[in-house]
Length: 424
Ligand code: GDP
Ligand code: IMO
Ligand code: MG
Image (cartoon, rainbow, N blue to C red; front, side):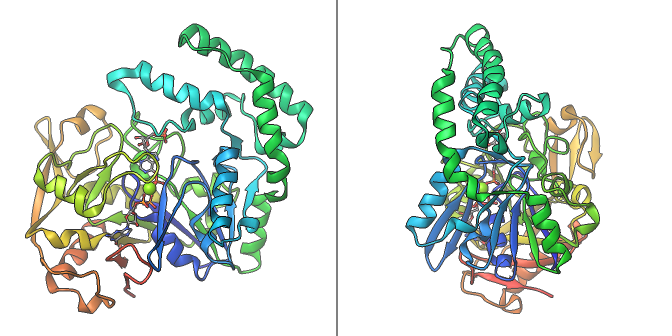
């Protein structure tokens, strides 16, 4: 698996952290290509829980170089705190590499994220309020400040002055907030520079050299396909491209380099934040999924909305990412239901849709058409070979792959590393 992308096939929180960590055992580099500390990736190793927001999930293996690519947005304080937290638990963060071209999340980005959401009121996105959207806005409007700017105090202050002049106008005049102070921000950020400098490098070159030398590189997506700014349920999305193409632009490699593209999907589906969600359950079944699946956000602690697996959306994820296979997680959570459902089409505005709708109006009116399958109602968390799963559980997995059109090569039955079944 020289170059493998592991990405979310749904609305995030599919278990990318667990799957990336698993595959990291045989990886040399594990690279994040988009997003920032809006992500919350949980890994459980021998009962110990690690929650990572910015540092790639491969960091737990001493042989892996974790890389934060140019497509990411970096809150330097979060990066340093996360490195300190790992060091306090005996994990050396010295190998972490950060792209000089990644953009910085600034204090005004966090502030704007909060006030813009308040301004949107009923139309709010339900962001993580980490400043992600405003940081990407600045990147694309070319007001952004990059990691490399931290190492030239004169340039940093100049860029900050320009950006802050505009941001303070917006904060005070549009959103009725107090202005932010240039010296305070400059002192804080330039204070982080000496600790960040040893980690900064040309990550595109680093990845290219690794691939050239036949090393194994994993690309770890954050968020998920349906949160992609181009291919997701816009405007209820994040501000980057978690889909497979994002791995190329967010790292600086050509598309031909990608051999394997693994979509991680839960055996059901969840969403945190607002926006359309055809298979959402508002009943006791949905509540049971939340409780049994522990569906509360890693980053914000928010309750995740839950529903039956959506095969229409899953097939869409296979298409827009060019998925070569699926990793199906949290199958154990479905052990508690006698009958299971999978959405195979939607009815909306008098028409049946078997492809994920392009139009928001259609999506909002979707009523899922379900196929029912028997549950297995047995504890499968101790199963370690696919063949040992109850027949109904195997039937469920095999139906998912039929509907998705790609093989399910990994099945996860618990949060730990060992609770994983591989299929050839
Ligand atoms: P990510 O953002 O995609 O990395 O996913 P999160 O870490 O936010 O959420 C997934 C949650 O499910 C975490 O708490 C994981 O520890 C947990 N998890 C992952 N795989 C499984 C599984 O197969 N079964 C169960 N019960 N929990 C799992
Ligand atoms: P991981 O990597 C689930 C959601 C937010 C909101 C929308 C925009 O753990 O799967 P943002 O702060 O990015 O501007 O918020 O995207 N969101 C996530 N939902 N998992 C995530 O990350 C998410 N990151 C952002 O809830 O709806
Ligand atoms: Mg998460």
